[in-house]
Length: 191
Image 1 (cartoon, rainbow, N blue to C red):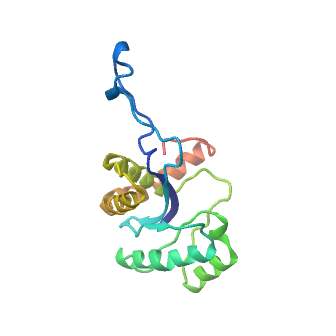
Image 2 (image 1 turned 45 degrees about the vertical axis):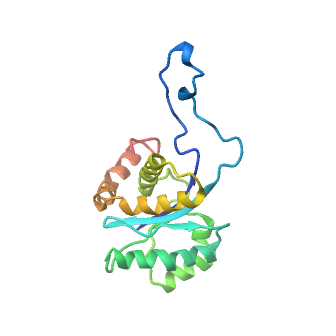
Image 3 (image 1 turned 135 degrees about the vertical axis):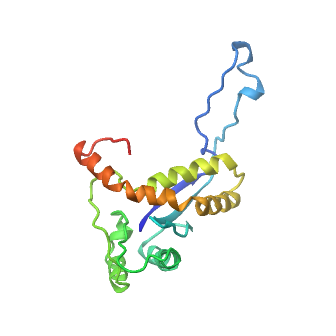
């Protein structure tokens, strides 16, 4: 079960746009896009997925510490594992963020008998959930939410629509990802 957090900004979802226009039409209203000069707003999400599909998506309110993180795991990770019918023998992945590696978090994971994937300290971001975050952000941009409440609603809806086959392929190709990173000595790969 892969997990991570991401930030989604409301107005920077389509930050790069190209317009073909004639020189005399460069300032025509249809060829320009409005910008936001002050805080556009964003939300922080925690999510998880496995080869069987996406788990629950949770909006993080305020600054997350180890206690909030353990609560998120209790209220979202464990129910997701049950809903995805993962059975026994699954392994949990999270990175080395201080709240993930806090003594209290490790104790909580141990108390729940969760096996945690060892994760290197200084490594390229190899978590395949990054691919899902990208897919989510593209889907959200297409829907163009207008405020933070709408953004959260759209995120939840679009996350739930990600097909299980997409998740299964990310997990299936993980070995290739590792081989590619090792062969490239930790530098950039197509993943």
